[in-house]
Image (tube, rainbow, N blue to C red; front, side, top):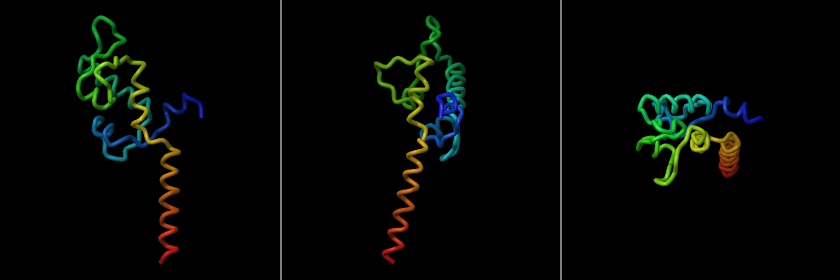
Length: 111
């Protein structure tokens, strides 16, 4: 899968991101949709730096969501990097399903 298709593919988002976006737990979104929402959040809360428009003056809500340190600078190009951990990787999901399936098979064998 190329990088462009990864940004438009929908993934299950973390509970923390779902809460930030006011979406239900287990909700699926593309990274592109989330970036658009965060960009709108930045604009509506006037977090874009007036002197350098590429920089974002983050608030506590954004800092907590993106797990930023006090020394981290935030620019628009950084957003994708910081939101990526909030998307459930498909291979992790498939691995969990396989483990659940194997576990239930083992439980059934013991019965």
